[in-house]
Image 1 (tube, each protein chain N blue to C red):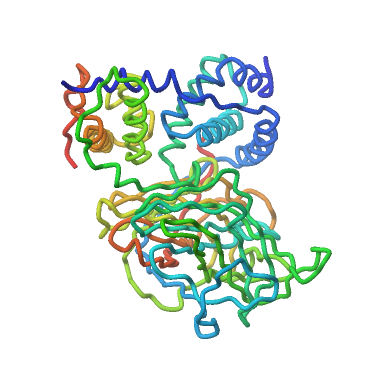
Image 2 (cartoon, one colour; image 1 turned 30 degrees about the horizontal axis):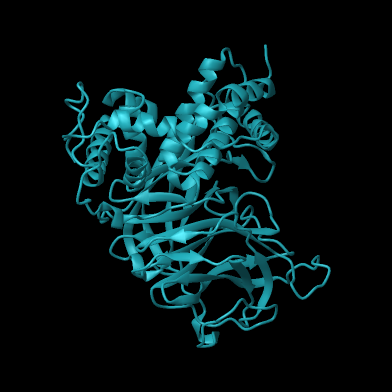
Length: 176
Length: 353
């Protein structure tokens, strides 16, 4: 059975770039993404003495990245309030507009709390349902509804109206 | 036309800036963490819960001995500290209370707040941390290494978790210890904001030094608030999980949705209410948003500090000390650091695994 050090080598070599890109979605910063992935790797490899598959290990790391993100104070010690970005732009972003829209998306994501950001990523990138998000983050489904509703509303103020996924019924517009 | 958020996010993920991971930096961290885990898992399991109303005490610098003028440049060893800077740009310091084990380093978090209309940028070569004695003189200086220039948007706060080394700055070797006594930690940074360069200076976080270090709380009576400024403002929950890790819940019942706090945590357990047998702290701050509150886990497992063995089964009296500051919301500009005390009973059970 490979040691944790061998697992670490393989994971960083083969899946490091993907984990860093996922971390960028969660943090909006390359440096913070690096720290987030490192922290998640440390936590997972410290807690899992017997690892059977690299895929399983990566899923643990991603999940830990999410929960670490939600625990924002422990993640980077960096906190920003960007309320000025909540002002709606004159023209909503064109989703095919390239770098300009990418910048708008990064700016819009920066207005989200870590909890909102994690829920949005799980919903729209990982395609998880509300209950699945709740299980992943270890929070209630009611909290997921609130974070998603508030997060999407904030994004919408910068990007324009957000298209809801087909199965989003019951996720958006939950009780506050 | 509505935005396809799924497509946008996948596109951002595909084109995210490249970073890098260094196995040689990660592996030692894993090794250290695994040693802690092995020790913790040998404990057996137990869980308990206590809820307590809390009282908050404002931490104020010893203002009477401060000079009225705010420094305009970094301070030198032996210099007299001035008053905290006021106005749009403020600095405050939160010192982590004694964790398990002694340390020649004071864990702390600086909060640089931009209340002005323009973004500000922290100048190269700053910030600096100062240990100040009861006479108001600088006795230790630590230069904080900042990897990249820091920008703080209007209405934002920037937090830096760092440490101040307890080394007498008057000693050319840098090896002389700090004399026993009560001290404060202050921080200074130079920022460029709108019209020019200015200094952000603030602090006053209390630190006790014994035998050259910040003493462990083990074996001493738990602290008690000297006076409650705001009774029952916070609700604190405490739980010891199966690995003997400590989970803390903090909620501010009167908070507004935009309110946000950062908090250092110290948990102390006693058997009889007298001497502390478990002292566990966290060098990092947790962020608590709005009325919903937050839950976090301290990384260090609880151990009986008298024997350095696993914490035994039993009922313990608990004191949670939270050093906290509001960084967003209605009271954002107050730059007020408080200590919140909560007390209750926690039962630690046997192995459930």
